[in-house]
Structure formats: structure tokens, C-alpha cells
Length: 508
Ligand SMILES: [Zn+2]
Figure 1 (cartoon, protein in one colour):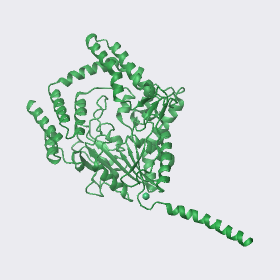
Figure 2 (tube, protein in one colour):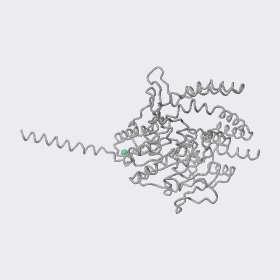
Figure 3 (tube, helix red, strand yellow):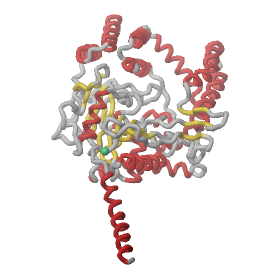
Figure 4 (cartoon, helix red, strand yellow):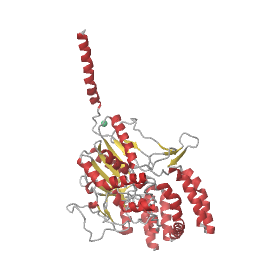
């Protein structure tokens, strides 16, 4: 009997020791930690009254719905042209904006109403993990990035479990960088091998800072550049090319200036009402949008957006935590994580006109996020200018961090050796060329730099048509650059661009 018990006991003991060994064998040995794409603003669909007959998608709203709701504004605009009654037009405009977006507002502490819900994200194993597959993490953009970082933590644990890996790699796009930095603040990077930031407002974006301090301004040159640069997105699209050409002709004929005058009148007459009756009630309590406000605007913005130190105490505590402990502590967080073995890559765009309705319209950017903020502090010339001729690189003078087109000094950024600047890269718009570069970064266990690979120098010209990057060249004036672009990156849109520049030149 004792012998039987002893055998039973040893079988149990053996099975106990075998189980962990079996679990250890289950670890994936592919050597490629799974990649999680930490998505941008709008990644999580927000629904009002889900599961009821009043259910409606709040964000992003259906285009058809917006157009339907905007119809009264269009007819009110017609009325405005007739009678010049800005207040009547303002009534219709504000009511419409509030109807479409008003339900997105949070409470005084920055919490969502129970009526608004965000879709949940969980990884699935439909596709085997590899460097060609990204797990997708989205979230409610309105909320405190710290809350979304907790969601990312859960998601990372689920991916590790699903793929049998101890670590993951992150590719953060735009607002995904805010979520990722908040994650690093809360949890460190022991679970993360590599992080790629792509067009992230790591130090904010001027459009948020300026709107939160009421600095609205229309500028004709900025609007022209902003509209024109959207066209290459329609590469090889004949209609897109024709619209581009038409726009350039409108500008040449001075029609745009007349449109701007109408816009200026609108801003003059309606700015205060639109801010007080729509924008401030909607955005003042959104910690997610507060995370975009750069330091130079931050304290003024709290006053302009009318945050009450008592009423909004909880909200202020939250946004201050992100601003000071995450955004303004980026250098410390990244340096510590690098020391612990995590590799970092930062890919930012430049030479794109930023949102043309704010005073900071001359900031170089990817169209949405300013290059100086995304790059964690690079020194950038204005969008229509160059660094001074006698400019001297500010730091690390043993290596060259100045762009060949004299637009950027990368030496002042937090990680100059692992920050890439892609000329003409529209905010978070990628192609196969990006995919190949990201794969190169994810495959490496060592920290790669802008000096590691001749194919990926620090300053690269985005060649959208041919889905690749080519080195940035010295600029040769407007027409010279158009010629250069056409011969180095032959495509329909570069042909149209050159044609329009020549027409402009001969008409001028
Ligand atoms: Zn694996």
C-alpha cells in the first residue's frame, strides 16, 4: 500500500515538474517579438446609446450624416451674403456644430458619460504573428492618456499570452505616441523591445496650443500651400491633377484673396461666439486633446479655456500630470528606457504646410504635427524659409545633423542619432518604403542610427509615386525644385506641379 502511495506521489510530483517544463517549451522561439500598432486619434469608434433604438456613431461620424446636418448652414450662408447678419448665421452654425459633436463632451472631471461607449480591442490569432503583421490597439481619444495607457498595458499582456512572447514591439502613430509615452511613465519598458514613433505630437502640436489660446488667423499663402499639398495624395489621379492646376490658376487670378476676405470677416464677427458657445464647452474638459498642447501655450490655455481651479480640480490634476510628468519629462523617460535596453526610432515629416487657420502657420510640419515638436526639439526653419546662411550646428559638432536643404538642425532634438526626417511626408501617410524601413528597425536588436544604413540617411525625400525614399537635395528655388522633383521622381503630379509653376512664372 505504501509502495502504491509512493508511486502515486512520484507520478504527481513528476507531473508537477513536467507542467512548467512543457509551458517553457511553449515559448515562441521565432526571435521576432510581435508588433503592436498603437493607433491614432479616432481609432476607437465612439457610439452614443449603444444597443438602443437611438444608437448613433459619434466619432467618426458618417460623412452622409454630416452633410445632411450641414445643409442648414449652407442655406444660412446664402442668407448671410444677402443680409450680412452674422449673428443669425452664427446661431445656425453653432447649433449645427453642437448637434454633430456636442455629445462628445466630457464632464467637469474629464470623464465620459455612460451613454458614450468606445469599442474594445483584443488581439486575435487569425494571422500568425510576424514582422509583416501588426496587432491593432485603438482607444477613446477624448480620455486621459493615462487611462488609455492602462488599456494598452492590458492589450500588451494579451498579445504576449497569445503569441507566447515575453516582449512586444510598438509602432505608435500620431496620438499613439501620447498613449505610448504615458505607458512608459506608468509601466516602464521591460515588456517592450523596440518603439517606433511615427509623426507623433510628443511635445504637442501648435494647432492645439493656438486653438486653446484663441489664436485664429487665415493666411492666403498658407491656405494655398495647404490645399495644393493634399493633391499628391491623389497621385496618378487625373482629376486630382486638374483640381491642383485649377487651384493654382485661382490663386494667380487673385480669387483666393477674395475668399480670404470673406473668411476674415467671419472670423472677426464670429470667433468669440464659436469659442464660447461651441469649442470651449466641447473641448475644455477633454484630457486627450489637452495632451496636444505644447508647453509654450499650456498655462495660458488653462485660462483661455476657462478651467476653474475648484470646479475642475480633478481635471487640472489629470492634465497637469500628463503635461509635466509625461510630455515635459520625455527626455528622462526615453533616456531611462534606452539604458534598460529598449531601442527607439522617431520618424517625422517636414516641408508640409500646417493647418492654415492658426497664427503658427509658418511652423514646418507634416501638415498636422509641427516638425520641432514631433522630433523632440529639432531646430527648424519656417515653412517658406531656410536656416540663416551663417548658421552653425548647435550640438555634437563632430557629426553632421544639418539637412542638405538647410531646413533642419537635428542636433537639438532629444535623440538626434535615431530621428529620421522625411521631406513631404504627409501626417502618418505611409507606403511600402516605410514598411521596409520599419522592418529594418524591428529586425535589429541593436539601436540603429541615421549613420547605420546608406539607404536610410537622416534626411530623406518622400517619393510617394514610387513608394521609396531618395536623399534630400539642395533646394534651387520654386521652379528649380519642381524641375528637380519631376526628373528625380517622374510622376503625373510632379509633371502637373512643374507645368503650373511654369504657367505662373510666365503669367507673373
Ligand atoms: Zn514568435
